[in-house]
Image 1 (cartoon, rainbow, N blue to C red):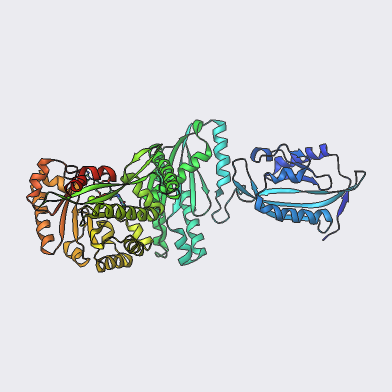
Image 2: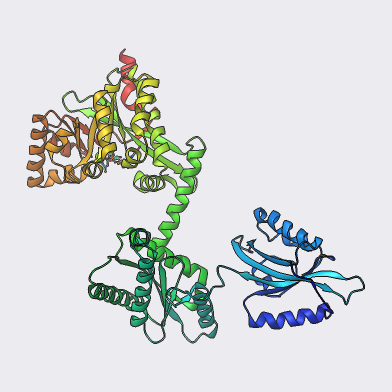
Length: 565
Ligand code: C2E
Ligand code: MG
Ligand code: MG
């Protein structure tokens, strides 16, 4: 600890003036903290970002507590105690504040304690500066480009000056950058970033500016340009990268994706634009990487909607699956024309969106992993319902859809077998439907699931057959019991001879290797009459009944059995 300096400090007002002068020369916030009087003065521009009552206040501890991240308060208090007690005369701490939007801001606070001898009683005063560690960084050391902070400043300046009405943001990201770092080391990672920066600099127009964002992302701000030009730039950058790789003897391989957003300065806030460009780059990566995507309001809105739906789905999962319902659609035997079972089909409704189609919410459940708890709820609900109906019809079969996320990301087979045991349902009356796409890329967990289901006589169906590439021989190996032909396929067969004959052959071949066949999506008498000649085993379609809730299903299809018995 050094010796505490003692000075004759100028009056508070004069000090405040000096601080404001400094504030204009730096991005830091200058402060004076009278530790004895608990008085605090800080550069005025702090008020733009943080919710303090004024830039000069007393009772400093209590006032500052409102902007300091609660978890960091004990460290700060401990350090201030040392300063007050004279155990230390230097303050140097990195901790977190919370800004007006509730966002966490990392700051570095440094100061030195001096004795103010102008006061009657000597007081201890901490004088120093606060730096925002993250966002105030204006340049990137690896690429030599300006950083995000400068992008914001340039954008705001351009908007204020009004010399240009519109612009484009081209946001570029390296595909699988983490993998490059892990496989080839950080130096290669840095070299890749430098290379991209150089290519961007080569391509950019005179008025365009390049910036390096955090991580592996870059932005080209193009004033007065359109999205077409930005896409051209992206393609040229790709070509330049490729040429450079050739020169380097194809040492490392990487690709880049790009999000493009066109905007008008007058109605654009930087933060929103930043979000849009992040979304646009995310879409390019979602679309398979190594490509560009041009932002549209429509896509963004549906993305925002899907996020909202995801919140509703998560809420429902955490509140006893409120809003979810299992519907049932009859499956009819062609031979007897009687209902032999039903397919369980999930529904979700919310006050805001009404009843949503599974085509909308199943992908969201899958992406978020929520399909795992919801899927379990579906098979348990459907099995219970089926057992209730089996009192009237012991062989009643329930078909339940399984998603590949359930299979690959959870131990669904144990869950299924435990539920079958616990509920006491006859396993051979339960059937699980899979879609073809997942079957093709099946891994060990799929094989294990199929083995366990087969061993326990639980049935297996291949859903939507005809939309993928599986061969019948291959399905026989997987011991699939039932093929379901999608409406996309069956409806074509009604009007097209080729498809009609093809389906006829599929039915014959499936039967020859012991598989049953169900035609899905039969809507009319005409369709039924034409397609029944192909001799499928089962029919499912609006013609016999739409998916309905359990109660309606019972009244429409099963109650007559109750009367008969
Ligand atoms: P899927 O398993 O192929 O279900 C058959 C779909 O065809 C159902 O659509 C059904 O309402 C519809 N359909 C049946 N007959 C006809 C007809 O005659 N005409 C027409 N136009 N359509 C008919 P839905 O209920 O909208 O379900 C769509 C898909 O969502 C299902 O296709 C299935 O892949 C998925 N799905 C539904 N429930 C679940 C579930 O609990 N878990 C999982 N993983 N997926 C589910
Ligand atoms: Mg199905
Ligand atoms: Mg289907």
